[in-house]
Amino acid sequence: MVSTAAKPYRAAGRFAWHFAKGKLGGDPAFVELLRRGLIPPNSRILDLGCGQGLLAAWLAAADILCSVGNWPREFPPAPKVTSYRGIELMPRDVERAGVILGNRVVVEQGDIRTADFQSADVVVILDVLHYMPFSAQDDVLNRVRRALGPNGTLLLRIGDSAGGWRFHVSNYVDTIVTAVRGHTPGRLHCRPLAQWKRTLEKLGFAVTSVPMSQGTPFANVLLVGKIGNGAAVHV
Ligand SMILES: C[S@@+](CC[C@H](N)C(=O)[O-])C[C@H]1O[C@@H](n2cnc3c(N)ncnc32)[C@H](O)[C@@H]1O
Image (cartoon, rainbow, N blue to C red; front, side, top):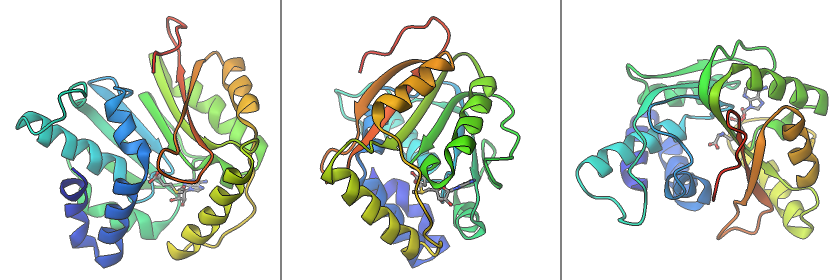
């Protein structure tokens, strides 16, 4: 699955390809989204801070492999995606994402602090909000809540600042990877898990938290926020 999803990035250069293989193979979030069925079928996905659009490539590969029967029996079927819209600040990443664009896949250069989110069924924010001050994080989450339709889902991965030494390792590696990807590392704005949950609950989300660092030394947690019937998901 990793090699299928990473393959299109060969056309975007060695860095984009190797980065895709490393991230998709080493970050548990991508497999877990599928294994736990966290993306409902036929969703309009909005991926904020999408980088080079790895999630779109991953879901496209999942769809192909599932439809030819090359799919783990214990996983729910790969979700068919109605559309994927990524918004990414860095032009270099948007350029790398050029190789995965299609009818239903767009990646726009923009700043999620000001971009129009329009409407979506699933909003994905993986490892992004800590780059901006708390007031901007709150504003983004408010606008996400308004963009989500009935039964909408927010998939927000954060680093838990109460996570002890693992949290410090996360931040250290984050700073290195940020530099390797050609960005300028800046101050990080992190919160403890309990505070993240309260923030989302105040916005009306029923929140479930799932540890999302398996196989890594990090303190990452995926927050699954559901609106609609108010029921937290079973994960
Ligand atoms: C750690 S990377 C994660 C990329 C992607 N979500 C993934 O999991 O593969 C964080 C991304 O957020 C982007 N980002 C940070 N601040 C942003 C902003 N204000 N608007 C849009 N993108 C932003 C960065 O440029 C970077 O590509």
